[in-house]
Length: 276
Image 1 (tube, rainbow, N blue to C red):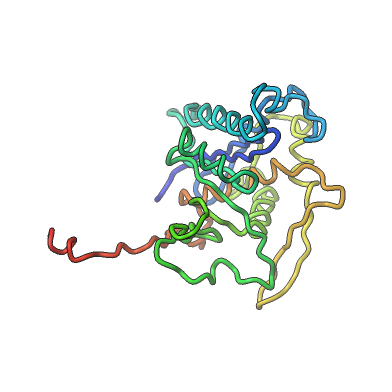
Image 2 (cartoon, helix red, strand yellow; image 1 turned 180 degrees about the horizontal axis):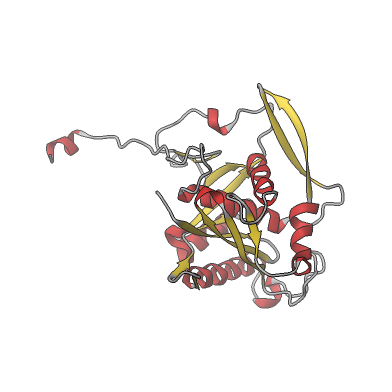
């Protein structure tokens, strides 16, 4: 799929739902146009531990699972219906929305069925270390779709839900590389607003929550990411990584990236040939 631009939404579920919305152009030039929590905390600086407006309070009478599902359904439905005006004319809508399935996969799958539709994709990050086999070396099995350090496994004979799995170490390093490029240059990721102070909490999540260690194995170097010892909140970091993966799934790529998907071949039966 060749895109002039792709609008991506990334969502992670938990006691509160964190979200981040990005616009991507060709060559991975990106723009963070919105982020926040649901329910809205109505504060510029807060943490998960001191969050006052929780899903439990928003949906009184519901249990933990019921509150998470209700919150995700409302947020997913709201943002899939929303549109944003483009400066040059026209509107942007969410094309692909990745939702982390790591916490409550059954609930996330229910939300996809009820509110997410084809635009919503369950996702799972895998911290592949230098000693592990990179996704680029994975054997292709029937029914799978492989992309740039992500793939859709064939889950038809398993208990897993359909999802995209991605190399979290690779995409975290890739994201920080986008942020290190000067605004205006191709491949840069920039934020909305005019002052740095309005993104102080964002900066804590992106730059202060995790660090990497360079490791070597299997003939390659890998930046392995781990939370800092104090384990600060990193939810928006994870959301932003999901946005980048979603853009790649849509076909956004840097020069030299393998943007063409490797889709499963259809198995033809005798009936198929008889109908020709």
